[in-house]
Length: 462
Image 1: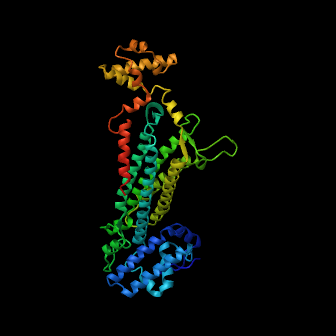
Image 2 (image 1 turned 45 degrees about the vertical axis):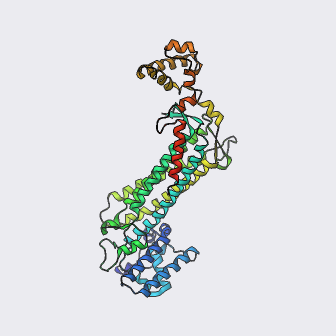
Image 3 (image 1 turned 135 degrees about the vertical axis):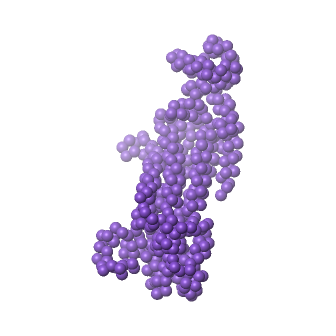
């Protein structure tokens, strides 16, 4: 049997070793150790500030906790499963350092509000790091877009050629997705940054604590107004996992496009050796492992969101041990999102090249300019729906004849409709098709250049 725990005087015997291992969270919540120490230092200061303990005791606790921090950083303090969780581990080591005064640290506090505080401190830092990574990602997107305003690429709907667009316009679509991700995390941060410290196990405490004092020390914006809610709320974790999932959706969508673009069927990009791998059996292969892994890892973040929702859906107030299961999903999602953002940023920045000649050819080998023929007629007084039907017939007969619209003679155009003139050829060139779409937010070159200016302005906001 294992050694009896701090809470175990109520019990006649210790936990069965297998149950102790099953119950322990130290293997993963050690991730929170520095946040646990920081929160405990604020708690110790508050206990001294309110006279619950003496100032000398408060100082001893603060300094002892700092020693635990340094020992951990230097690899001298590495608690094992017998510690059960990071909170007991830190408190036990603290007591070894400062003596019995260490046992006063847990006055007016429960592990329930303690772990809630630690998790919020951790997630608060990680959100800011991810937001900075999003800014780096956006910067790379803009850098490449600025060089490719007049590079054309086929635009698709239903994965069928639709209309040519500026490559910069295409990349800026992902910039806008990342901007929403950045703003969404800012909103999530506001609900992460609320302090549960002082809520106790569920009902508050009889000691004259000052919750706003610890909140200020820890730079929380506010405190939970209800102690039951404070210790059992994981809405902030669900919101973060939702935001993380949406980030992964956006990265996965571009990953899918990169995988297609790198294929022999598309040949829009070339993967550089630094961001691709080969086959173990086929020597000619160059595989897009980075976007494939990002696409695959997206599912695990989705899974953590689903797991968190399922954990919460049936929990009565207040704290339940089920909530121990929130941490691994949060930690893994944080690590996955950060790794994928880093990998995709490197891939786009230095791991691929757009094949400009292939792209230039691609936008000339289809009927993606058909809408512009209909617009040409509509601008000359033909009702659009009538023009649409006329052009549909032209496309049908051209396909049967093995021709593209640009191959039709002027006489053929005028037989179709007398409104056609020699300027139809210029109107349906890919460059003019793109340039003409000058409506706000469109792919027209003037709009794209303005969008790039706006994007640089957005990036400058920290």
